[in-house]
Image (cartoon, rainbow, N blue to C red):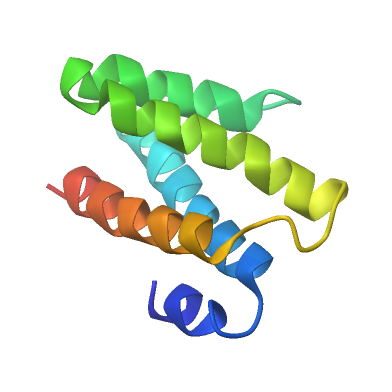
Length: 105
């Protein structure tokens, strides 16, 4: 996440994207630990839904934030450059740090 933090001074979209990718990889690792994997066009969404089923209610609001980050990241990468604000990038990085700490337990 240090690189994402450095990127906030240079490219907010990519700082946001790195934070999102960190959380996505954590979701995918969580799936693998439980003996599952996902493929196809809804792969990202499926991984987040799986994390919700494993992490439960305590993480529901944070995983909703992750899903919003997923949708925002999609737009920033595929539709509109310069979409992510500094606050969004900073918030996504903070959530990614919190999320990876939880998954590593």
